[in-house]
Length: 396
Picture 1: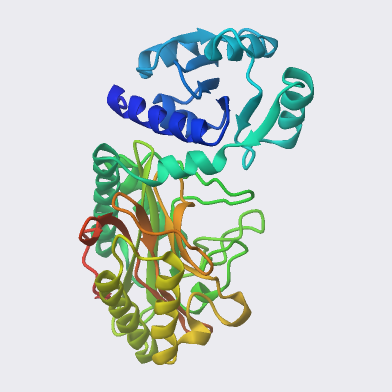
Picture 2: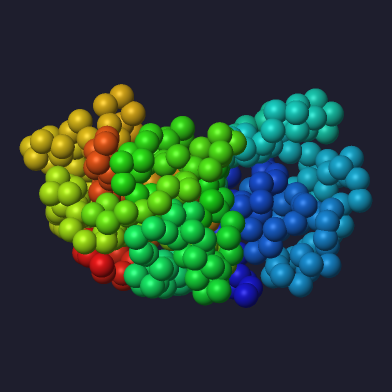
């Protein structure tokens, strides 16, 4: 698989326009996800993007792989980090840039100080992470094709659940079987997040009362996990009849992600969880009616919270009590935590081409969880779910 040359060119032009408007002479891209987005390959490298002119891709390891995987040219070997200032001058022309952009949201502090004090002491350093995220927020038809491929992996996994789910199987065993299905279907295994100390692996396969254990991360659900070293996800807990099993997966197709939650139960679930699931499914239906280009994310969030309050679910919506989170949807693409956020205080306006995972969930301590999650794309006339798996609470 190779990212089309037209994709790379379009992205770089859009980014250069933002650099020019922001008064930034050049940016140096260092983070793996951003490198993949702008070059089509992940290498130990620096991508130098001038506000105008031709970008320069300086690769320490491995230049030959970069040449074979990326359509971007020129690609030069970076034999010493001390050669980086000269490469920046080359990309910008003969004049040394005055304002230089770096990804300050993800760049380690020690690396930043080295660049600022040793390599570019005369330049003003500005953060370009917001500009990069703005470019990445609008997905192209090719990107949507990749994300549809990821949604296909999610469908394959949810379709496989009835083959493996039985009374007596542990959460871990079920998760292992489903991960094997995903990997054989093309899931890369890697889940990328931008946020500091944010960890994720495959997803959360959770069951029964323990599914309501809050997460250490800013997520509505978490689970016990197998160890304090990674206290989330499936545990050794044995699944029993009449317990709702939540299969919340994050699958990766050529770098692009799909987030999906589907629910299963051996026999009839507790009545309150059945009602909770009916509510979250109705939330999706209502949300699809009101969310469209021009909608303000914060207003959508407050509308969903109003629905939860009207139905008496507020205390249990998106967490329980003080553990509730203040969002119902997160941007999705190459990373889990992209823009836009359907969250409190987010004034972003939805535009065609945006993608996000919408995940209303009810957390009932001592009983379990009920949630439904789809990855949506904003089309010119409204929302379209990329997920095709049935949305019913499946009774086995």
